[in-house]
Image (cartoon, rainbow over all chains, first blue to last red; front, top):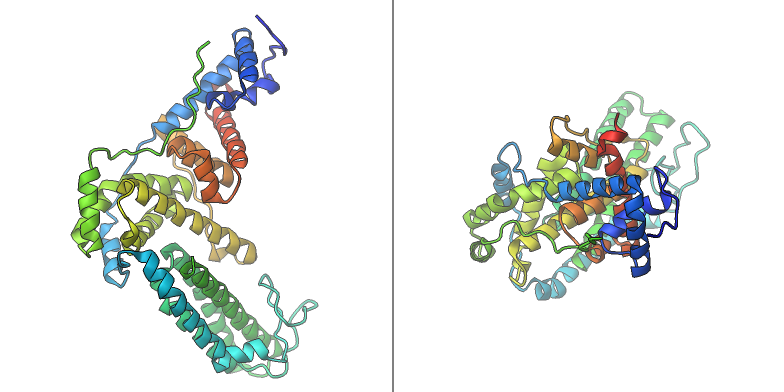
Length: 235
Length: 194
């Protein structure tokens, strides 16, 4: 019998290879060496037995139904517009949905609000934690409100992007939609708070900047979401 | 010595025998028959919910399971019957869940200062028996190791397919699998827990 490595209680060389051994991934020479090592190494034999137990217990895990019936909620969502795509979807998707997506993006990109955002010479205020914008980086505290900031322009751009997203909502993964909408709800709440505060103090640079930040955040999320739409319908 | 390694096995098909019924219901669902789709839901919800619980977490499993079946309804037109319906559904479910995880990861890094936007973690269930003990241990695994372990050892996918799901190499999935097994072994071993 060959013991080419010491049979220590924690034999790192072989204990790290036991999982591969279980899956038959060791080359013949390694497998032979390990099989020669095992009879003399209680630690490796125990570890191998435990690994077998892990694999067996994983394979035996039951498929358990949820604690309560999910079908009513699913049926409600299906009835609410989650439509069945037609048969032969590849042809349909290739011929129509990319065109629809392209049209949607053209509408969005060519509309006044979004074009203003794309072409504006007025830098946007920085958004902490968000993707880089064309604006300068704030040096702590509230940035000075950029000249030319107009919340109505943001609103128009946001409306355009929301329309594109809404048009393709049914084609998106529901989990993705939920994450997008959860983020948008948070931003909308912050925007509403900022607008309420501005109503009482309309000249506040901090509040104006905060509102601009929230609106830019929403544009960022919507642009990210429409990029997902584009990737999805063109896949 | 007996070589116990059997290599990766194909994905489980726990609903063997339902193939013809599934196919019939899938065809009806493709024509818009909601009741037929409900039968498919009832036949497969246990496995999908189990996958969701292990991949996403107990707290979000119901929600993700709903998402999977809504998505399946939307996409059932693309089911061609070339594989079992359960196989098609399961792959769709894995994609839905991984997309969700990817989105959560992206958003978390993007909105790192706003933890209320994203809920990633879920508490493992209470440990009362061996099965739940295993479930709790899986829930504690790091993200990548958990995904690979669940897909390979629980669900029976091959490394090559897991690698495609995750967009990594099969070498990476193998490394993650061995890491997960090692962690579970140490976690579940009585000698390690005394």
